[in-house]
Image (cartoon, rainbow, N blue to C red):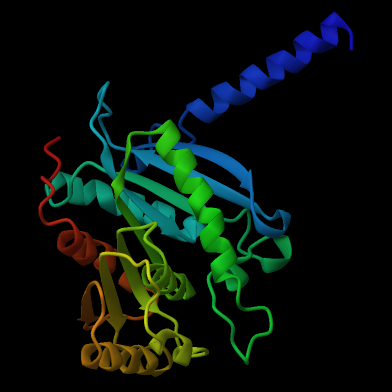
Length: 272
């Protein structure tokens, strides 16, 4: 390779590194804070978009911060990241890092693999069942975030809604990767028996589950799940909240607010 071509290639690398260090959010959209993006390859060569929202004021030599990992980032990340700004202004939440994990498109034909990644097997869906593989993939992403940002390895929180909530429960029952978890209106209607089995040897420490009450298809299996675990001892703390007046799509912000307040009550709220 010629010197000119080497220099050109080197310049492209530098430009790429610089781009990842800059916020991908326009400054006028200040409610989303400073957001960095990275693109990684995951299971089955699928593309994943990782977004990292930093606190409003990142101080040099900042102490390690609680870190919230949000699934379905294409929809959920801007909702939760923006709502977090209001919660900070109300001094309800500590400074924290918010990490969104998502896909390049809402279309499964264009790379959205959520129906595989977030689910345990189901007789009704032959493509379900990738949750264990996706959980292994997340271990690598968590390690990368903690290498590059001041994320506290002892205060990791996972949040997912619908089948993302199904994955969140799976992770809480089968791994200690995330100490805390928020499952917003989890979709358990196609494989509920799998979620009535005893947890594995490693689990989360606390699990918050919200149930929206207007949709029988989601509500009834979730209520059966709740009743089962109220009658059977779990090795971690469980808090199930019924969200009156909410539907399947309106629960995430209420779940986030109530979940964080329950999961991290001892962490001082942000003061900026």
